[in-house]
Image (cartoon, rainbow, N blue to C red; front, side, top):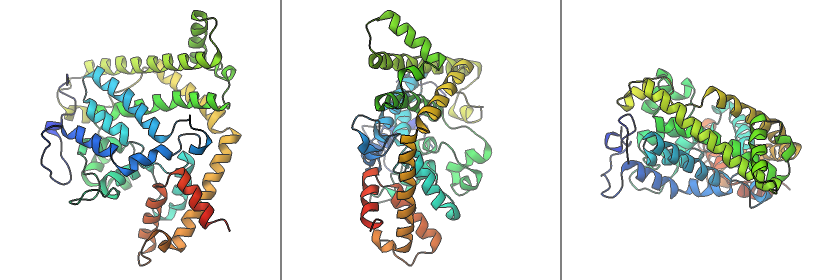
Amino acid sequence: MNLKPFAADPQKSLGRQFKEAPSKLRNDFQRDRDRIIHSGAFRRLEYKTQVFVNHEGDMYRTRLTHSLEVSQISRGIARTLGLHEDLAEAIALAHDLGHTPFGHAGQSSLNQCMKEYGGFEHNLQSLRIVDVLENDYVDFNGLNLTFETREGILKHCSNKNALKLGLIGERFIQKKQPSLEAQLVNFADEIAYNHHDIDDGFRSGLLIFDQLQDVPFFKEIALKVKSESPSINNRQCMRVTIRRMMNIFVMDLCHESQARIDKKNLNTINDVRNEVPIIALSEDLTKKQQSLKQLLREALYLHPRVQVMTDNAHEVINSLFKKFMQKPDLINIDEKHNQHDLAKLVSDYIAGMTDRFALQTFEKLCQH
């Protein structure tokens, strides 16, 4: 691995919350990745919504397949820039662990339910899962991941919440940056879901090929693909166009980020933390990314069929939250907890549900 001096280095890690003997075979970031992959929360991502509820079809992305795609893109960018691939992969695989069932609709609903108890945010929940809720180890709660993986998982955080998190929250208060590995995963995430949501939208029939021609960037590449292969059908053209668009975004991210790195005198990861954000798209590709996001919002996320799923998600999450708050014994929670602590435990339980389990539980407990 050709690590640059400003890359995260497992030999110089800020460490784990609980001391452990090092592995003879794997560096600490590899161990983090392996613990994440073997966790129950990671397995449950297979049955959690990306855009379409899991049971709508076997070919749509789930949180699991999305996380794998983000991981693949992240490793490629990390290798190109001389950053630590294992750390980038670990962050990518863990970044969506805290997502509720039913995607963003589920998060919005659970946040509303938790409004008077501090709210709900999937980034914080991802960190809570790896720090507290996974319980496969005897000597500590959580997965006991390194500081570098944990800081990468926590993409956003309000000052109010950061103050409760100790060292991991300090960068938000001090306006410092995370590692370049953490920064690049944020972009890999957006590149993955923008392009793959287009693919799933087209596969579902909610996005039609002609609609996508309204985005000049898409149209330009699609016309070139068709001119090279006149007999290509729209489905094939869509897939080739998406692949080329993704490649253009990844190449641009690498070139722009490398140019910014070259302008700075970065010698250590601390130099990275004290700088402005380094990983970035060019201005041109940033605008093109915005045009893709706008199309997806207007044509897919706000589509009536997706809105029906959103409305259903609100009903399921709200009903389950009320039911469990009234009868916490249904999920083996002691009734002696105060309302705030009880709400947090109920929130943990609901957030950990898969789409299918949430629907089954709703039908069993709330429809009679």
